[in-house]
Amino acid sequence: MLKLLNSNVLDAKADAIVLSIDGAAKGMEGNLSREFASRFPGVWNEIQNKIEYPVPLGSVIEYETAGKCSFRLVLLATTLNHLEVISDPARQGIIRDVTEKSLNIAAKYKINAIASTLMTGGWRLTMQKAFLSMNDGFERARQNGVTANLDIHIMNVSNYKNIKSLAQNIGWR
Image: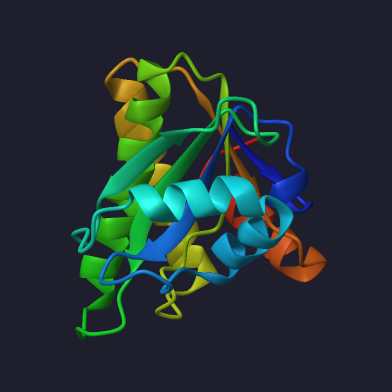
């Protein structure tokens, strides 16, 4: 099931979390990754020390936390890119692909739920396009037999209502 929630993703009751990074170099993570690092500094330091840069755009790297934080698995999605100019359709494809890859990895670990924010890729991809791309990735994973839930957390009430309306317009209840 794909769910939209008006809450902070770091407070999610999920087995895994998706964090965005720029795979070009250490220290080029997204805002959510920085918040995660502030909340779980030991886990973040371990993760940072294990990443072998550069990591190609559109990749997903998995890290088991061994009970050191509220998420059993951290999925680092390389959706941020500060060097290249990328078209909106290419950006949407990257978001779709990392969503599908994240769900496929979750299946390997028998994860029940993945928590994520709306992945706009740091490119100012519209929330609507980001949601539709994530929905496409979710549907692709479902077609391949993946059963993990994807919980998309949106903190801003107005943004949450807009995306919820879009979801209902495309058939989500």
